[in-house]
Image 1 (cartoon, rainbow, N blue to C red):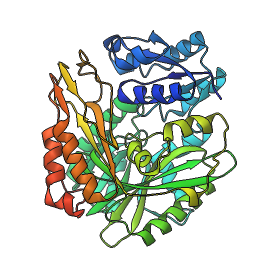
Image 2: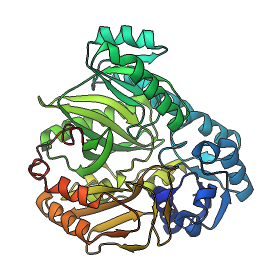
Image 3: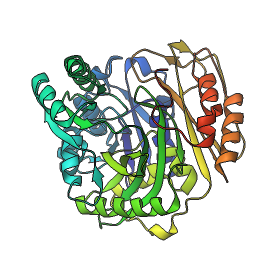
Image 4: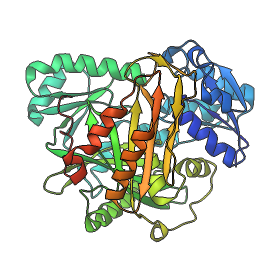
Length: 435
């Protein structure tokens, strides 16, 4: 096991990883931008290093500065969290070149799987149904030609990264040029890669993803699914497990197919296979995230398995010691993302309590939300014996959560979970409409 890990991230996920390391007896190294010098992850880590100005391109995306910090600190491994460099094969190679373990898949594997267009070609050789799409498109003219062949409407998506960035819906040919420019620019800013591809638009549908873990022996386990259909502008707002749209027979079938597909492509590490579930019950493979997901918490609450610890263990060469049959998917878990609506400084924070209530956050009194990074300031997660009970627990927890000084979306999330479509479980990606 590693004795020291550098966390190449910020915010609530950096705090989450530091906590896991502390519980495992691993020393931690934080990196931070000038804007984050007073951040919670910096205070919690055993040591910390400033890696540049506030802009992510000059700090959290600076591979050279992060590697320098790791070497200076004597860190044996780097945990990238999610976003930033978490799916960057070039960074993983630099880590390996410098004798540092990248906590994630090998760069060669990541290169194949992080490029969503290439991944769909690989998955076409498995038994999963793959959404019809293209390879990376090199120009607006090529995008227009291929979109016409696929048939409108189509989705234009970033080949790299995730988090809903670099995605545009194109309904007509005259929308291609603007969508291409916007998606490519957004992808470049978020992931350092402007390449995009096209896929057929599956509509109406739900967004359902399956969590897997795989070790170097070829053992693969699936920890059930998460329903992430409640989104606004491709940004997830609420996630739950199990999905109210998936029955036991469907779940078992897709889990088996997912395990076989992951084993077939030789993946090692933590990962998520994302699908669109249409109204005829078809699961269409969309992409695979080869990193920790923001919404990993609901799976942890449901299964009792610490995904961050297992991600570290697998990177250290430790084998998964439990079988698929031993994984228990009991009850229901729901997560509400708490996002800042504008900049501000936290004046007061009250976190809800009670059994099976969790708030993952980077907030402490005095924390400033700046315009430089993602708006996520926390994740409120609950677990209960039934979905109905989990909804009541989430409602109570949202009512108790107080964040003063930073405008956040608590009231909006209360309206979402009180909406009859969400209560009934009969919602899809159209839930938020244009809101």
